Amino acid sequence: MAAQLWLPAREPDMKMELIQPFINAADAVLAQGLQCPMQIGNLSMEEEAYRRKGIAAMVWLTGDIEGRIIFDLDTQAAVRVASRFAGTELPETDNLVREAVCELANQVVGNAVATLNDQGFHFRVHPPVLHTTDGAKSSEDTEAMVLCFETCIGNVFMNIALRYGVASKAAVAG
Image 1 (cartoon, rainbow, N blue to C red):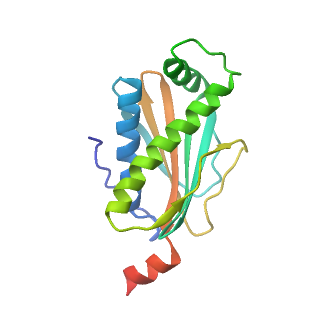
Image 2 (cartoon, rainbow, N blue to C red; image 1 turned 60 degrees about the vertical axis):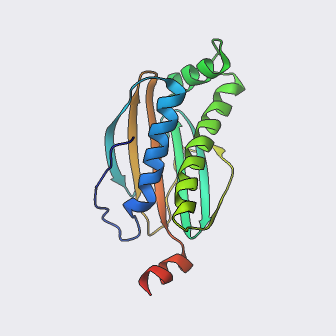
Image 3 (tube, helix red, strand yellow; image 1 turned 180 degrees about the horizontal axis):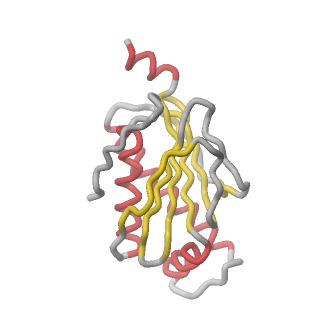
């Protein structure tokens, strides 16, 4: 079970109850998929555009919860993960490396979404896409939480910029 993070966000829209399911899901998916211990290294809140560290996949959410999650593996970690999944050594240029990062993002977000659905949230999850630009800005009024998971294969970064959707915000305030 992932350690609970109780870091108060500076932005009122950035709520830990929205973020914690993604942290728990990443912990579970990485521990099972990599079969090695991991821990959360760095944790920060950022307002600046995200600079990817290696091979990254981005997933958008719309509805009661809005925003995006970027799942980013340093290049060598991505190659190691893809090679482990494929059962053979893969070169960095192999498309399976990028597909593996998208699949990990899909698994993490899918597990987190199941938890949030159980809590009554309704939203649409858009399929993972490769994040190839050098910067991704969260919406103007939402900070992003950036976590670094230190694993046996290298660092895995998760950049989470989520907030309540307009309809949910009104219901929470009402």
